[in-house]
Image (cartoon, rainbow, N blue to C red; front, side, top):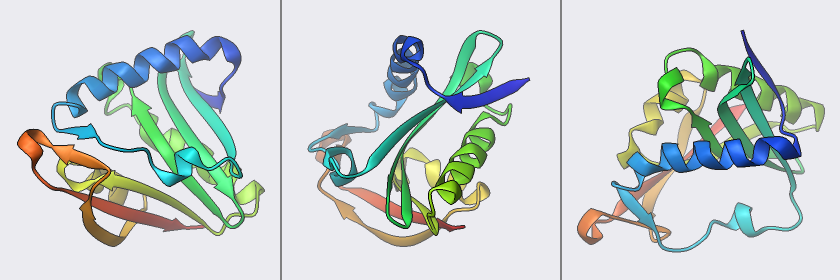
Length: 153
């Protein structure tokens, strides 16, 4: 059974490996040009969750909480476990944590070109804004579209 809990120090190497593995395919679509504001902000409470199956880390989520918003910074699912409900379990746990901290909504930003918008829509998020972004650049310098998404709690 998949269990989700707050990450502990011993999970760091596994979550870093997982993020690299997931990003290998995505980095063929785009390259990061600058960092995101939520990642830079020192005033937000940061939390990392892990999804485990036995001793194996099969997913991870990073979030930042500030005031009435919890922002999902990253959601990673081991490619071997896609379709097992890992992303849904992680979002459920993020939702519980956000509510406990008084958040009124979950937010995230994703790139339209990665194909992640429909996944997050199935998880209860909706696009509230979409714009061309300078934070990342597509293959051969192509412009990329950032979809800002929200899920009311």
